[in-house]
Each structure stands twice: as C-alpha cells, then as structure tokens.
Image (cartoon, rainbow, N blue to C red; front, top):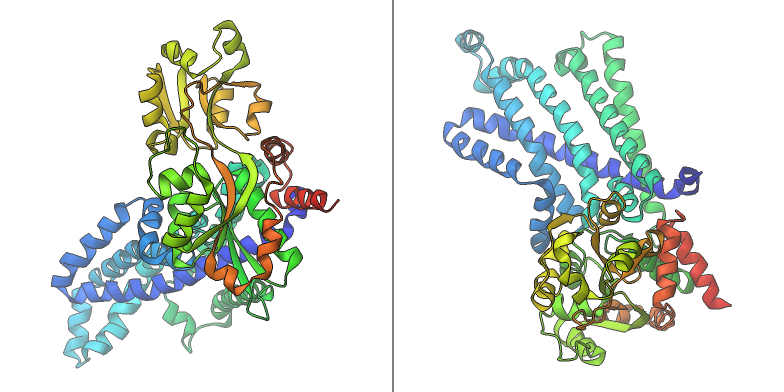
Length: 513
C-alpha cells in the first residue's frame, strides 16, 4: 500500500536515477576509452594519469561530494563530476590493459603490409582490446548505478533519496524500495553491456556479415534503454513551469526538516503558480545548505537560530545564552542577502536523556546529576554533536562529564542504539518523537548551557524580490507550530509511518479552519 501511495514519488526517483546514471556512464565511456588509448601510446603521460586516477579512487566517494560543494555547489553538476571521476579507473585500466595485451606479431605483420598507424589501431588494436574494454564497462555500470544512490545527499535526486529518507524517518518500506530499485538498475545495466560482450566484438555485430540474431541481441536492449531514457526525460520535464517561475526548497536530513520543507513547498504551491523543486535530505545540513543558498542553488529552507548564530556566524553566545533574533536577521540581510521570515513558534534545542527508570532509581533530574554519575553511563550521539563547539566540547567543560564510553553514530541510529541497550544516555532534540516512544526522561539543563534553537524560514532576498506574492503566505506560518505540535508531527512520520507530504498537507488544512 505504501508503494502505491508513493508511486509518483518513486517514479520521479527512478527517472532521476536513470538519467543521472546513464549520462555519467556515457561520459565515462567516452573519456575513459580516450584516456586509456592516450596512456597506451604515451609512456610519459601514463606515469602521471594512472597514479592520479588511482589516488582519486582512494578518496571516499561521500567525501568527494562534500569537497566539490565549495567549487561547483550541490546538485547535478557535483554528482556528474564525482560519478565520472570514480567511473574512469576501471575503463581506463581495461582499455590500457586490452591494448597492451594485443600480440606484437600481429601489429608487426600489419605494419609490414603497409598499414598506417590509424589502420593498425582500427583493424588490430581496437577489435582485439574490445572484450577487455567491455569487461571494464560492466564493472563501471554497476559501480556508477550504486554510487548514484549517494548523490541524493547533495540534492541530485535518484533512488538514494528514498533510502536516506527511509533512514531519517525510520520507514523500512522506503529503504527496501530504494535499495531494490538500485539493484534492479545495476542488474539491467550489467545485462545490457553483457549483450555486447557475448559476441566478443561490437564490430562483428554491426558488420555486414553479422546475423540478424546477433544484431537483435544488441538492437532490442539498446532501443529499450533509449525509449525509457526518453520517457524519463519527458516525465521529469512535464512538471516544469511554463511561465519560468521556480523556487528550490531545501531541507536537512531529518524527519522534522522533511515535514517543514513540505509545509513550505505546499504553502507556495497552494497560493501561487510557482513550480517548487524539492531538494530534501541534503547531507551535512547547514554546512552544505548555507553555501548553496549563497550560490543560488537553493532558495529557501528552515534554519535554527542557535545553529545560525554559532555555526554560520561563528559568534559567541550572549551572557544569558539568548540570541537576539532582530540582530541575527539584520546580519543575515547585510552579510548574506538572506532574510528570516519570522519564527515558526517552536524551540528544538539540544537536551540529554536517559530512561525514566534510570532517572528514578539513580535520582538523576538534571545535567549536573548525570555528570556526577556519568562513569556508569555509555553516551551516544551523532558525529556532529561531538564536533560542534556548541555541543559536546563546550558541554563537557561546563558539566565535567566523564562517561564510561562514547559512541559516535549517524543521527538517525542513536535511538535504535538506545533501544538495543548499546547506550544508556543519549542526546536529543526537544521535538523528537522517540522521546515519547522510548519513555525517555529529558534532563534539565540546570546551568542553562544550550541556547534556544528556534526554527525560522530563511529565504534569499532575490527570491522575495522576484516573487513578492510568496512573502505573505510564508509569513502566515509565523508562530503556528508549537514545540508540542512539532513533536506530534514528527511522531506521525516516525512512529505512525505517515509520509511527510501527507502530514504537512493535514497540518496546513488545520490552519484554514
């Protein structure tokens, strides 16, 4: 049932994944064979190009996506560059190896008969190296299809988005569908290239002496790939705005952000003729979204005042830890040409939690109490929490925690770790749905270390000037979502397994009553 309800969403992801995979595969095939031929004929370049490709291949792909963001931003361009870089190694190596293994006596015989270098390459080298090239291409196809799944982290779309959204919202159906879709693409791509490899020579298949059966074995799969590619391209462009109006709404990779992103997107769609492009679940959160906002790749998203003040502006907190919103907005306008359209009404600040049973039996009510008994606890939190200056590094100085063990993990896995007993103290956000589900006791921050993290809509001033009609509708959301309401919305997505789009739509309906 979940699959059928989300069929339009899945269809879009399939189309995006196909076009991105195929586009990068075509580029890799052309560049890879070209480079392979070049290094075969040029010994000097071989000493530079092959080690360089090997070196790039050792860099984790997820890190490569992040490294390119300051240079090319997020989205399609970034994804294509990374996929091409990682796809080059097997093609270049298989091309070079195939050419190198051609028997020297055949080349000498051809040259002895007066063949030119071009004729030798065309009639000797390339036909004999082709099986090796196709073998490398099969490996490349599977690798590119799999790596395309990671492109969702930088807003490039594809089936990886379903996987990451499933992890973020604890929806197994999304994870399974995304994973099976990627596997299906990889298998079909492998079989497609395998059809060329069966006859050991592409040249034989397209020659005049080829049988009709040989030709059909190549033509039918190729035509099928072309048809579904064209269909995917047409489908993705059906929703494009005829009047050229478009806004890109972004979100961080959490259930809350998916919901808020949908609320913004649907509010714009319901009150204007602007086409909304959703770039949800961008990995790295503010770290990657902020530069993308400045470059114009993204237009609007929900940010938190504490994150903006401490991580974007790198400012020290005021003595009372209360951030002046007016001052924050003024700095954003002057320094970044970004504007905060008010605050949504809830405070999603950090907290620390233990089970209510531990809190009762050990008489722990606040952070100081936990600090005194911290050697008895294993504390787990997301990687970001241990790195941010406003999180664990500063917190430890104020409360002198000395936990028995620290466990770093993905933000969406920490509650599972708590439930499985791998940790017994965890960082939380005050709107987390899992607080209720796991019966956690959120401890009092008795020394008031954590500042407020009030959510607000951040938008590029250029977009407000271009589409002034959206300002009023988005400002109507100001103060409409309490902390309790946000926790309830998160609960509907994470525990009741509703889609963020449906939860957002239901919420917007309540505002009209």
